Image (cartoon, rainbow, N blue to C red; front, side, top):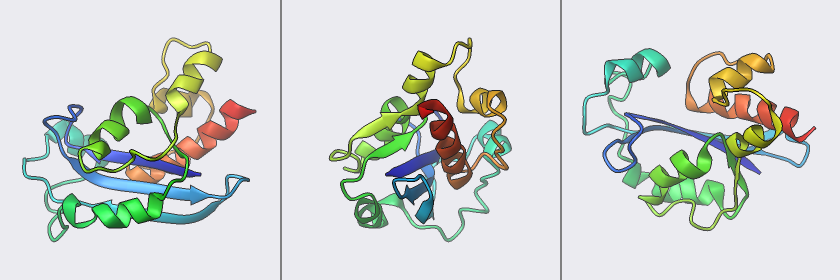
Length: 157
């Protein structure tokens, strides 16, 4: 299984851009066995509210390549593995499919699972991490992957 997360310039998969890709491959016991983290240049200025949330600035992206240069690296890492993420179906997959990534992977959405199994008004990753006392150091792709792994463990038990 692979847990994945993106950091983007905004919420519109038609008008915004991927800044960071993070993915963690796990074994059947949900132990981390590999990871991939990539930063990408942005053709638009990163909105201040995005930088404040995840700490990614144009300076951090200096020297990063374009996502098109890393498409094959991402595809090879993901293979045909099951991919799990929080709101993966309505957010991450829509961004990645612009680059022909995630078409051949089964998607498992922890947001959907949480909505069925957790009786709370909110189901954001931020809220659920607080609800389940999951440590989330920064709002960055790999940290969010690790938080999603912990959330998934709690949701399936």
